[in-house]
Each structure stands twice: as C-alpha cells, then as structure tokens.
Image (cartoon, rainbow over all chains, first blue to last red):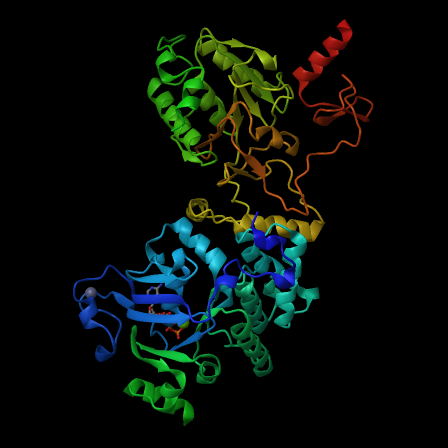
Length: 300
Length: 300
Ligand SMILES: Nc1ncnc2c1ncn2[C@@H]1O[C@H](COP(=O)(O)OP(=O)(O)OP(=O)(O)O)[C@@H](O)[C@H]1O
Ligand SMILES: [Mg+2]
Ligand SMILES: [Zn+2]
C-alpha cells in the first residue's frame, strides 16, 4: 500500500514533493530526436529551418524533432511555441512515453535522482514513472480521456495507477480537482462525452494534476476554452506553480498564455529549436527571423 | 525456473509411456504435442499469472468444452495417476464423464475417482473442491476466456502491452465505476486477482467463494484455455490477491445462514436446485463433498 493513499485528501502530495527543491532541475532533455519513417544518413542534413522542411528529400522520413535540448527547474515553466507541424507535440509525446524517440536522453529529478536516461529504461519502469511522476494534457481531449467512463473515473484512473486504494479518498480528490476546474461534483459521474470541448479539456487538466506529479506537460491546454474559463484555468496553473513545485512544459499558440505562465520559452521550426531564452527577451527582442515574424504577426 | 515445483509434479516427461492403445498415442496426444504443452506449463509456472501462448490442438471434444484444460491434463497424466473431473462441482455431468472416459480409454494405468482426497490431478470447470487439497495434487482449470483485461480493452496487442508494463489502471477504473454505479463491486465469477504481486489474472469462472483458496495454496494450479490457446499457472505458495478497495473489500458469497438441504452443511458453496413442485432448495455445489458428509452422518 502506498503511503499517499492514507493521507487526508487536502494534504495529499506526491512522495517526492517534500524533497523538491525549487532550484533543482526537475526535467532535463538532451538532443531529443524523433522521426516518422526509417531514416537515412542524409535525413539530419536535409531537414530543418534552413531547408524549410522536416521531410528528408532523399528518403521521405519526417524528422519530427531533432537536437532538442532544454531543462526545467522545479516550480518553473517552459513554453514551447512554433508553427503547426514544428514538432511541439512530438516533444511532449516522447517525454510522456507515447512515442519512442530515435535518440537523445531525458532525466527526471524523481527518477534515479536525475542520473538515469528515462528513454532507455524498461517499458515497465517508464510506465511507473509516468504513473507516479508525470501528467499530460493532450491537444485533443479524445487522446487524453476515455469518453465512455465517467469524468471522475478519468481522474480516478490516474490515482488508481499510482496505487490509491480507497474509493472515498479517490472520490474526494477527484471531486475537489474537478470543482477547481469548475466542473460541479454533480457531474462527476457523467461521462465526458456529454461535455463541451472546453469541459473535456478541464477534465483532462484535473486528470493530469491528480497525482501531484513532478512534471506536467500541457499541449494547447487553453485552446477551445471560453475566455472566462481560460482565466480560471490559467489562475489554477499559476497557483500550482506557486504551491506545488511542479515543473511544467506548456505548448501554446497563444503568446499571451506563454507570457503569463513561462519564464523561459523555446521557439521551434521544422523540428528544430531556432531560439530559446527568457520569455520577455524573446517576445520583446526576437533574434531569429522566424520568431520576429511570429511576434509581429501577433502584435499586428 | 522453479526446480522444486517442477520436480514435485507427479509425472515429468520421461515417465510418460509411449505405448499406444486403440491406435492412439498414450493419453491421446502425440508426444510432440505433449512436449510443447509441458514447455508452456513450465514457462507458466516460472512466471506466475502470465498467459503463455501454446499451439492448441484438435481433440475429440468440441472447443469450449474444456479442451485447454484437457490438453494440460493429458500432457501431465501417467500410470499411477488418479484423475478426478468435475463440472461446476459435479462428477457426473456429461462433460466430466466424457473427459474421464477419454482418459480411461487412452491412458492405461490411470485410475479415475470422484473422491477428492484420492485424486492426483483434478480437472475442473468453475469450482475448486471443498475438501482441503494437498501439495501433491494438481488443479487443472478449464478456461473459456483467459484475458482479464478484455473487458476494458478489445485489442490483443494492447492487453499484452498492458501486462508487460503492469499498466493496470484501466481494470481498476472498471471496479471503481462498478462501485460508483452499484455501491459495491458486482463482479462475481472469474473475479480478477493479482498473482505474485505482478500479473493480473482471471481465476477462470470459479465463484468468489473459491478465490481465497488459491492464495498461498499448497497445490499447483494450471489454467488451460483451448480456444484462445493460452496456459497460465499459480505455483504452490504464491500470493493471489483479489483486486478490491480498502473501503470496499473483497467478500465471498454470503448465503445468509442457509445450509445444504441434503447434507446440512452451512460452510460450503451452495447452489439453488429446482424441485419437481416448482420450488427450489439450496444444496452443496460440490456433490462428492455432499455425498461424503451424508455417508459420514449415516455412519455416526
Ligand atoms: N503519425 C505520424 N506519422 C507521420 N508523420 C507525423 C505523425 N504525427 C506527426 N507527424 C508529423 O510530425 C511533424 C511534427 O508534428 P507535431 O504534431 O509534433 O507538430 P506540432 O508542432 O504539435 O503541430 P500543431 O501546432 O499543429 O499541433 C509534423 O510534420 C507532422 O506532420
Ligand atoms: Mg501539436
Ligand atoms: Zn533520409
């Protein structure tokens, strides 16, 4: 029996939370590479922003991301921006274990004290790390939710995977998280197929946060939400940053969201990182022509 | 491989006679088939609860009538063995009689019995005998549906991945949803269990009553699914723990003080037996046990 399941709901924190040091690097990624296709020796050379494509001209393989490196400290948030198809979702899926990367390393503070490469761990270990230490909000709710079981069940699944074994505590925690997402407890036993897109997205966020994970990956979490609901979701994320010491990676088209949530930002194009640094600097004084275009198109 | 367990099996490959009778191989199956079934059994014993694929063959009994269990029995049995076959607690059902006759016809030197304590191998459909079993007895279960995760996942590739990664959140959620909808866990026959702290397994459609008897049992349990071509095992002295919640614990059937109308037992698994006048009475499901109790009482 896991110790967390015996704690009162409001106090429930991941085992590692106490040891989370705000200055510690929670997640570190080096030279992450992922591809669709078999690849050839020329793939790397023939793709990227200087070729304006992520498709290898020789073999047709999609180099969905390559040479992606970054680190996120506990309690901090990294933003990823970039045009459609630039590889943002791919990066998150590799980290969460939905996609096997072709190369690179990822280390998690909560896994072997950050000394081991998560990508080369066994499937069972990766699953355990994902169940206990990570949360993910998918760009499309249908990828992140089981629409046939209840909203509460969707949150409960994450708690059960992390070995919570009391229904009353599971319901209290799930109900509490859903309420913070402005989904009333009275709807908690309804399947999310009956919900609006925005509500489904909020169920996903509640689900991602259920275990008090060390790292949360959020893919377009506010897209499709009403402005008023967006504000509530953003408030919650800001509060999590303050109180829970969670490291977050936020992918968003919305530079307003990035400016609000992320100290640091990474700009991707054609599967590569073209610029990264403090968000304010990038938005005020973009260096790369693509970033300049991105920023000016929003400001225009 | 657990050598101790293997050497405790009453009949290893070398002891099986190769002589034929009525034009059949000993115990009907040819030696190659028996060898491959035994290999699957050894693997199953080595990884408790893991479903080992095997090349299920045709038998003169329709699939779905216990061909998986029968192949296990025929591969193990040899001269000096005593076989008991029960179908839902009855030694006299057509299915049980057919299986016994096949063995009597093709395996000289094997005795059959209805007395549980005399048997070295007990092939069963849906029950474990009430009488305590001992270390040199083997239970062989006929299994219609070996995959406990099928209720939550249709795809075989996905259920295999889930077992490999010990990714059991979804079957737990099914139990959670059951509790939310019905106020209790309604699953009864084939109740899912965790074997050796690792694999989720279905104990075949035995009643909940029988499930605790698999936990740390002195005997070896072998499960054969003919149609789905799977063999799995619970070796002696292995943990078998039903999936349940701390606040909704596993409970066996409650007969509310009822006793067997024939032998008077109030500590056995009872079934309803319709009477000629349209009414019904409760009676032991294990007929040989019931019979023995009646004889015992007649003598005293
Ligand atoms: N299953 C797949 N098979 C082949 N190519 C794929 C597959 N999934 C994604 N891709 C390609 O990989 C590249 C990166 O896709 P990804 O989804 O990571 O982009 P993104 O930055 O998240 O885009 P968006 O902003 O539209 O969500 C794209 O060129 C995409 O077409
Ligand atoms: Mg995307
Ligand atoms: Zn190529």
